[in-house]
Amino acid sequence: MSGYSNSPKLLKAGIVLIDPESAQVRRIITLQYNPDSLSRSFQAQAFSSESGADRSEAMRLKGPAVESYKLEAEIDAADQLEFPEQHAATVEHGIQPQLAALELLLYPSSGQLNSNNSLANSGTLEIVPMETPLALFVWSKTRIVPVRLTDFSITEEAFDPALNPLRAKVSIGLRVLSVDDLGFAHKGGGLFMTYLQTKEKLAAKGASGSFAALGIGGIS
Image (cartoon, rainbow, N blue to C red; front, side, top):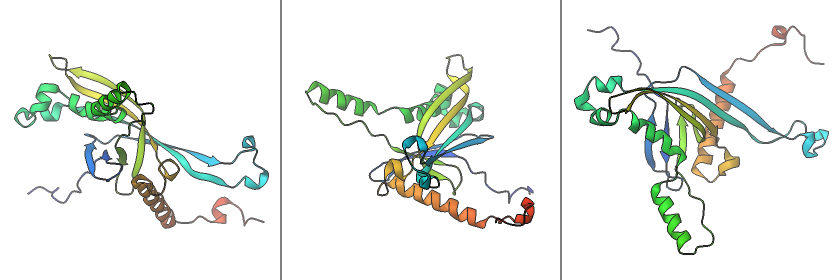
């Protein structure tokens, strides 16, 4: 019997697409391999003297910080090609299906484009911009955040005889959408508030420091 039967299941990061109105799940995109690193950046939404604010506003915030993620993921067909009878799509197209699922995060659907084109041809003066599914970036149960894909690049590194890509590195940039972007009534706004409240609970679990550790006796 294997000594690893009780090993914890490896969780994967990914992106969940949901309908912005009904909140029904449209698609789940899991990353084949978890990235080795995840870069996160924050920009405070603070009042500044440039906006004409006086000194009494120095400690005030206009809203949640603007948070961004940056990660690089790898996609490789080797595992699937080892069992070709179970992965016919990979045999025929390589990793193009996985890449296409990520690429479509930046596109309106062909149906939306055709619909707007028909409206324009019929003389409609004002056409509402096309709405995409709400994307949720999932990195463990404590990080489920609504995001917008801000930048995306693919480096394809190996190909089969039909020029289907077999291995690629994907660079993904994401911006967290907060209640400032979506509002409190939006499903994504509610998910952001849950994410923020989780941060607060995690921060409360952390041990507090001491003045002694800072080499001072107090603040006078």
